[in-house]
Each structure stands twice: as C-alpha cells, then as structure tokens.
Image 1 (cartoon, rainbow, N blue to C red):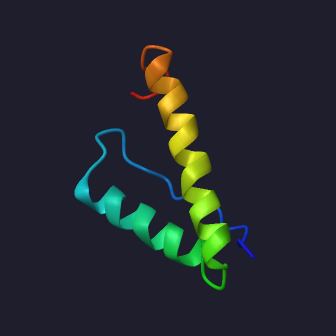
Image 2 (image 1 turned 90 degrees about the horizontal axis):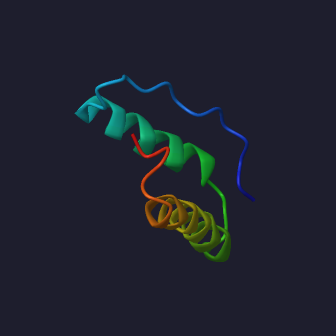
Image 3 (image 1 turned 135 degrees about the vertical axis):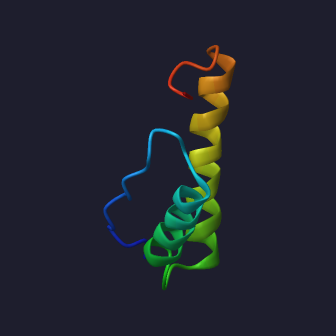
Length: 61
C-alpha cells in the first residue's frame, strides 16, 4: 500500500539537496508497497510529465 506522506518543500533553484529530498520522500511513500503499486506509481508520474512536455512544457519550470 502506498503511504500518504507529505511532499517535501523544494528550493526555487532545485539543488542536489532537493534531489535527495525527493528520493527520501519516494522511499518513505513506497515503503511496504507491492512491486505492482511501485510500477504504477512511477508510470502515473511519468505519464503526467509526458503530457506536460507534449503541451509545451507548461508547469515544468
């Protein structure tokens, strides 16, 4: 089961520390999740990102 963990706050400059925060957030969120849940989680995020790119990158900055 995917846990409900608040998203980390990221700096406006998106630093290396922000990448570490996101990785720790993913680790916490997906702790105890099945392989299928993990794959679905990343596929949903990838699909949203792909749609933003197709739409001209709005929201990717």
